[in-house]
Length: 315
Image (cartoon, rainbow, N blue to C red; front, side, top):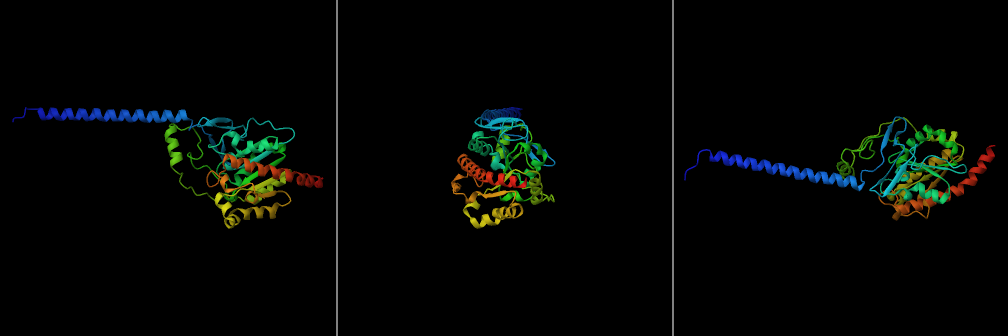
């Protein structure tokens, strides 16, 4: 059998062309698939989440004046003071400032009505202005109150919701995955990164600040009712010894230092609170927020006569 001159070269060329067409087709199919995933992600609303801003004094906070609906059902709103509330129009009779971390903010898994502030507002019958950012510590919260001191004149009370991680260094911005500063170019890629990857640990530098000093300064400038609710993690609720060493110890210190100016309440000691009210290791379910709001409302009503008596005694 004889080979036709050049036939081998021709066959090789045909194979190469076929391989290139196959590669181009595969890339085209991959591009279309990725495009469909991206379109699906955008349509789903998984990219409709709050944005944040960095701040030299506060650390970071939710950007003001924004709203949306995560997954097109869990609505959220932040006003001009980065409060998880509508436009800031304080009531002339009664207002509550609720401040904390992700427990107060509520997060993307919950609709606005199921978050702690709105639930508390229903029970009190007057506006509750919620300021919460996931990752904040007590020092971040106190820095916010210094920045927006002007709003305190309208507040009848300030309510802190604190957990065992809140009594250390102030938090600072470290990752777009947990606290995005801008909309991602690819919603699908961002969602996969956020929900399947954990941001790397970033050591918190020493600030030289002390929550005791800054809380004392705040209490000197604000004479109305102040309540601090000690919120346990699921593990701390189940293990009293762990809770005493991680959380209650800070509450005891706050009482010792500021017993004339602040009411400290242990959530774990309230019969309304239970293990099945958590949706993860720390955050409450919608039902949990309802129970937590009830606990806070009950103590606000108990604390008001004591605060009024104290203020009258100072006159």
